Length: 84
Image 1 (cartoon, one colour):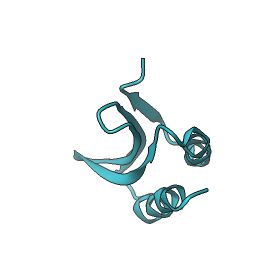
Image 2: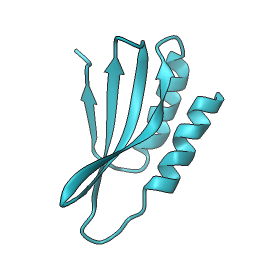
Image 3: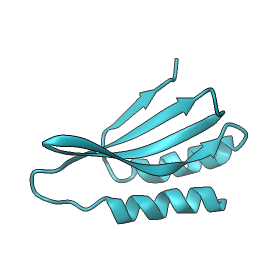
C-alpha cells in the first residue's frame, strides 16, 4: 500500500471517535475531473461535517480496493457518489 492509502487509514482512525449522539458514515466520491477516488468520513451531530481522508488515483485500482476493504471493516454505512 502506498503512502496515500496509509494516510487515508491513519486519518480515519484519528477522526472516527464513537461518541454519544454522533452518527458516522463513509462517503466515496468518484471525481472524473481529477481522476481520483476521494474518501470522506461524515460526522452528523446536528449538522453534517465531512472530514476529508484523502484520495487514490484511478490508476491505482488495487490500492483503492484495499483501502475500501479496510474501511468497510468498520461497519459504517457507505454512500457512493459519481459511480454509475
